Length: 517
Image (cartoon, rainbow, N blue to C red):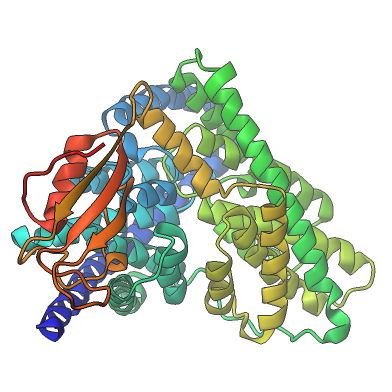
């Protein structure tokens, strides 16, 4: 009986993962094509403004109207605000409610709008949120039995979205483990790997036809570092770790300024300020705005002047933080990498003037981008995988591990919080404002045929804020597998008790419960 249940569970996980991954891989690849065309149109528009500056005033008036329109949309669908990855994480953890079709359409439309304006936000965050929505949509195709599988489907879609956007499948799987759920389970890995594998297959088939790259960076032949070159990863790790602490502190201060001291300023004016600054800076230099992808690729040749690099670093840091603080729709992953790449290019320029072989410039950039993921986003395992997969870093394993350890370690020592966690906390604070959390304890019984039957506690995505304190086994079978009749002593902290009970009974079966505390 146990083997039959396991076969059913993993069969469903494979089916759902493949379904979510296939749909997400196709849609996100099409989305990348649209984003590419819109970004190209944006660049042409800014070149026109450089030649015809009289159009700046009409453009500014248009951005003012857009700011009010965005605020109206955000008030109706709050999940469309800010970075796509933090929102997706909140949804995957069950902390944020989600309507998949509305969010899929909204994230496509609004992110393309910010790309057209040139706001320094990327397409990888919307790709993850889009995958989350499509993953939930995939579970609806399974009918009633797909309801308790909702967060599994969303997880598979999110991983597939990340992998398709970045061209890094292993990093996509690690995203589920390291960032989304902070846990490892066989069922979770099954859904994630199936989704990412099928998404990568679909993307590889569609990308050449549509003319979009399936990877973020071209393959590179990086020189290996010897023992005498150990100072390079040491320097990069310390500098990037220190900069991560400064950036995260700056972001936190900017968020406090906009939320508290400028609380009475209408949101539309805050958004307009960022859009207007983007317009002005972009007219001066398009490299200072947009996603930063093309900028990163151009930095690998090491020919950008140091003075221009410093201007790019300051401008992109301010605009990227401002765009995210004002909750404009778009991803922060790629723009953060662009900031890290720019600072790495500064280091490469300085060390090059001191006699460093120019052949090591790409190595410094690869190590710097890797350290940025580990430090600013607090994803060390994903950083290592991304460096090997997307940045051709297979020959630099030891230096990569060293910069990841240094950058991540410095941010931990300084108590710096991941930018994704910080954004998610702000979203939750806004959503829970004026509401009181309810804390209770009770006992529920696993019903025959329920979703939880035959699974281990670690394999189940319990409602957000609920913890299983103790399991009273109905039979002397031992082991960690849940069986019909097992009693679960649970404690929960929730802002929406009816929703929590709806999710819980979908897992353990319908029943009447009595609150004990």
